[in-house]
Length: 460
Image 1 (cartoon, rainbow, N blue to C red):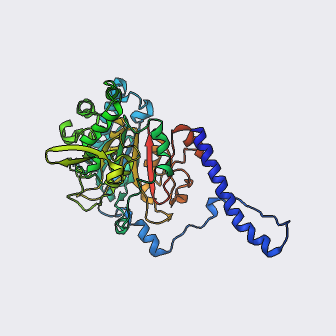
Image 2 (image 1 turned 60 degrees about the vertical axis):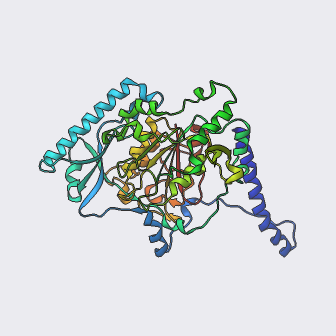
Image 3 (image 1 turned 90 degrees about the horizontal axis):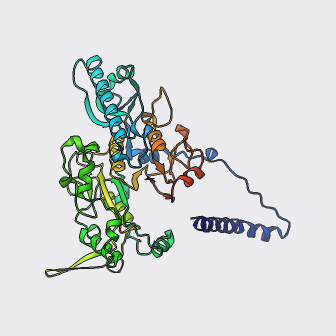
């Protein structure tokens, strides 16, 4: 890792030198002197104007929408008292009986608050609860009337009430006809070095919280995935066992701890095979994770393919199926081709994801032992974003859900195209609690930077 960072630093220095040399040479030629001095001044990011023209600003905000100030709204009711991860580590979480008991206590306190809201605010009507978040947060996500928020916020056991934002796919990206470059990107991002040292993603679980996946796509074929692992094993019977792959029995073992358990699903419903051992639709509350029945785009398959498209693809000749190199035949292979994918669809026939839909999926990904969690959130253009409904104006100005993520999950890193000045967050980190970029680097094994959009990647 140290050698890798050193190479990155050398490349950065060379780039700076080239930029400076391009500016210096014309100056020397024009003035014909050897004593010209070039001054370089560091400029704070806060002083650089980032305002967009109004039309482009409106286009940038199409992917994130604030709910109406009138009528029914989805809110996050933050209940007083710590969440499970306030007290317990994610390591060995599913087998930690003390953590399980505490989680039941948190759920019981939420139920008590829900009853209190029903009695004191709703006139006896049952609170329309969508999610009970207890693991990384102590939050009741519910649908209420906007004019009821102040009364709920005033209850003694309620810490805050936050109106959730809703996200929609970026339609502008669908108009861009691009060809995959996964066959040539290996040397650019360093995966060739990882492959040479034996790292292929085998034994890791990647959660993709997005628009779903094409379950029939050849790049996610279960047989091809199994074949790749057999090739890696090379006759070693203990190799595949050592990977601790997520299988149907393991999903069954933790099913009761998942947020989706309340929706009456079984491990048989969730298990799509060895490559896709878990798949669920958090918006429509069913197991349809494909792109076939909604118009929310195929972005989820795009992301999943970049992360973990198989090393081999099936080739059928009559009744015989063989497996051939994906790079040689379809010119595409994921960065971690032997990783398993946890598909968490948060865009469906009922529309886009609310903040709590994402958080419910993140909590389940933690329970399922995800090694990394990918969320692609952002806006179409650089510039300020409106976070007003995403904050609790009466307490902390830091966005509530970002604060939760920063406290409980290790953030690998992201390059923001969206200015967070309005929420007092620096450009280099979505977390004000992370004091410096070095803190992020020290806590995580690798960095992921996206210049075009926000890709949040979390690691255990």
